[in-house]
Image 1 (cartoon, rainbow, N blue to C red):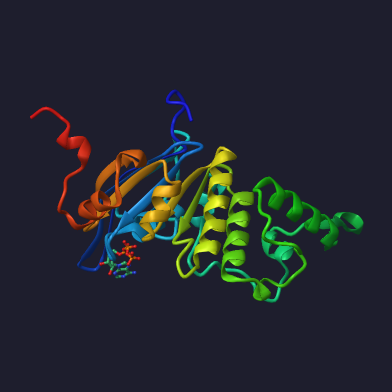
Image 2: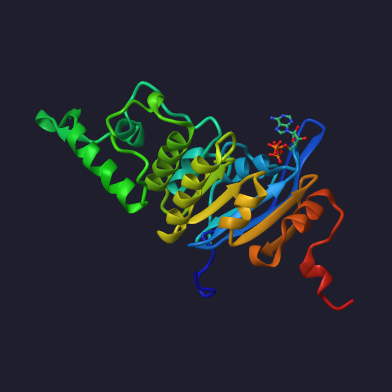
Length: 262
Ligand SMILES: Nc1ncnc2c1ncn2[C@@H]1O[C@H](COP(=O)(O)OP(=O)(O)OP(=O)(O)O)[C@@H](O)[C@H]1O
């Protein structure tokens, strides 16, 4: 990460209301290449709404999103994907009957060239090889067989496949919504290692999580939201869990502001 390069993501002034509920006011988020930014906050703080405005699922009422300093059209999942943003949602959106390799290439399958330039048969061998290459490059050792149906995997293994799929599609930024929710300690650790490998590939990572100990293990920066606003944006090394909770609950102000002269 260098300060001279523009951030991969700079979201400013994002706002979104649902009827009379103002879910997001002044949503701000900056992420650099090779950086993990954790987005934390109590239930209903506006984290998913902020992420949905960035990933194109929601059209914000106001605000701007820039990728590599270029403005991105809002309210379009396709535009976000074309700008190199991939999102791993809580539901994971995987086909349980298809294999790991087929899920990795879902809706962008590799095919052998067909006659007269037509789309040919699925190239399962190439997909298996590419799946292994991807797993290898992310240091994923938990999967011994990419031909297994995803429905036969453990929760942690499924999550790792979902992250790998997002990494293979994201040119700039991977957003992960609660990737360790409902996972045991070992499986969470597996996911955390995949997040580190994602960062080490030079991608930006946004991690939404309520699991604060894990957040502190992997995040470079912590962005805290409360009541639809970003209330703190602090290097992770400067924070302890108790301080994050106090910021989430509004019992402490952004430490940066406290260090400013009055
Ligand atoms: N589609 C929707 N329609 C109406 N209200 C919504 C909708 N989505 C979110 N909200 C409201 O917006 C506010 C912010 O919700 P959001 O899901 O962004 O919070 P969150 O921080 O992601 O919460 P959690 O940690 O519980 O997932 C909440 O009050 C929520 O009820």
